[in-house]
Image (cartoon, rainbow, N blue to C red; front, side, top):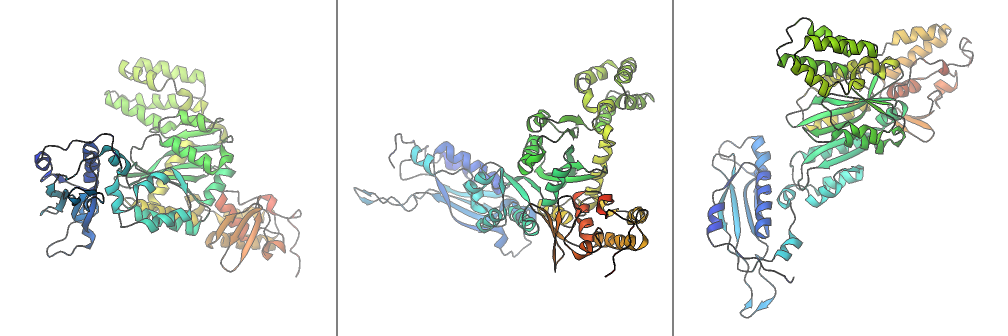
Amino acid sequence: MACGRLACQPPRGMEEAELQEKEFFSWEEFSTFFDAWCEHRKVLFFVKNSVPLSKCKWATAPPQPGVVEALKYSSVRLVCKDVRGSSKPTQGGQQKGCSASIVLKMSPSKDRLIVTECQLAHNHTLCPIEFAYYFKKGYLMANSCLPVRTTNKISKQFVGAQDVRRLLSYCKSRDHGVLDVLHGLDSLFASDPGAKVKLVFMEDKVIVKTIFFLTSRMMVLAQRFPLMLFFDRMVGLNEEFDLYTVLCVDGTGRGHECTYCLTRKETPDLLRFTLASLVQSVPEVKFKVRCVTLGIEITNLEAVKELLPNARVQICRSQVLETLFNKAQELGVAEDERIWPLLCQLASSKSPAAYNQAVQEMKAIFPHGFVRYFCRHWQPRSEMWVQFWAFETACNVNACELLKEHQHRLLSALSPPLTVAQCILDLTAMQASGTATAEDQELDEEELAARYRSVCKPEPAGLIEEELGFARHSLYSCQETAEGYRLNDGPSEFCMDQALTHCSCSIHTSPLLPCRHIFAMRLRTGAPLFDPALLPKDPVAPLPTC
């Protein structure tokens, strides 16, 4: 390859002195340093040989698992790309291979990598054009697991079961939790081939940054109940990752997850990414959402209008209230017994006049610093958090309680700290069993049976009660179809309509009463379990004789 300009080599010995004995506390740290070092000098190195820590045998105590994960190798030798020499003949014959090399070894303390050898004098001219052609940023990180070009290409894209299996086949080693995450996603697709998954990797690194996914059941819920959505951070999984969810609300006021987003802490613009991914997964929701309630820490609220043009934005009222009270504490005025009741009165104002009155009282009691803070941050957004303007009030839904209860349920079910991969498996299992919410677990069969007994004769009412029990305690796999839904109980498969009023099973087709399959699918989709549309036109008629 011809070069337009040849790079000058640095003075011999100077660079060796800079590199010799340099320490790195992770392979990622060395990889980042080495990328910049090579770019600055326009040199090309590759890993000639290495010894993974996971394969080492130790005469003394081995390194801690966290150290093995961070350092990756006990020794690594990097050599110049021209180590084999040039194939072009010179006046003295074929050019000898370049001897430039760098050696890293784990320190005696087993907690860092150290440059123990470096010979940086090249026997050939360095070529910037050749460097630009061959250099791949992140090569060393890719070398330990997946090719960086692969993760860069697939990042922020939806992936399917075949994509995940292909990535698994590319994996060279157990690295950065990537392998475990891919196995978790493979398990998700095995249980639900229709699931939607989007993977985000750090740029030029084989490190998972964000995983967005929703199951087929969650897509059905989003399609069925798009009116109000709720988005907030729900659970801190560990020191690095948080779990965010989007909730929808069914006709009875119960909350249901319709997306999961596992992401590294302080990931920017997460609201836009999550809503855009939801709309891409379930396009029908775009113009049907009327309100999105957000946690107080969520930023870039303008993304809601851009992605859901008919939706208004609200901020969780109880979180605003807590924030205002904490600010009052900062300013030393929270000990005044009038502070908390006045803040509550402000947030729960039932009219604009009541709100303005509360603001005037606040200005008379609170110090100037607090009033200035309130007028700058919360007064302009009063329609987003004061009860009078709240969208959900007319729908008899308490958004604050909904988010709080859902967070409590997830904490109980997931029991952090846990890995991202384990969280994927746990959430998948929750959705597959149809028990993702505590309301599903708290199904009051007695109350439902009593309501059916009030409109049916004892014999059909008894059959309905029996079917309700089977619906809750049996395990089914479900799939949405063009005509409605398909449910599999193991030996058999049954089809239901979109309205979930008819089923192909003999339990339904003979007496025309709701069966366990209809109840199970209604339980999964959030449809009401007591519905007069499920009964024959003459619900009090006796069962037909066989």
